[in-house]
Amino acid sequence: MKPHDSQNQTFMVLGPWNHGGWGPTTRHLGVLDFGAATGDQYRKTIEASF
Image 1: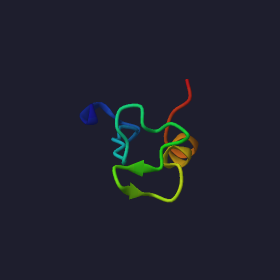
Image 2: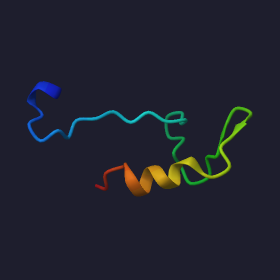
Image 3: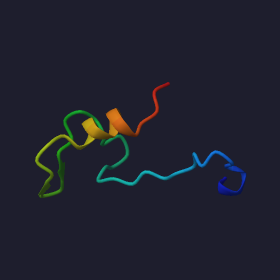
Image 4: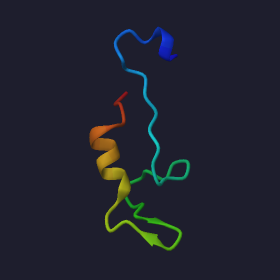
């Protein structure tokens, strides 16, 4: 896709989520505690609304 992206809008998002784990209550990955729900910022700043 990148060769056809003249407006530089192709990017990849990686995060501490399993599939569907960006929900409002996800704050843990195994024993790792992120201290807050990881999906809040993702939905506010990254996820495109449909």
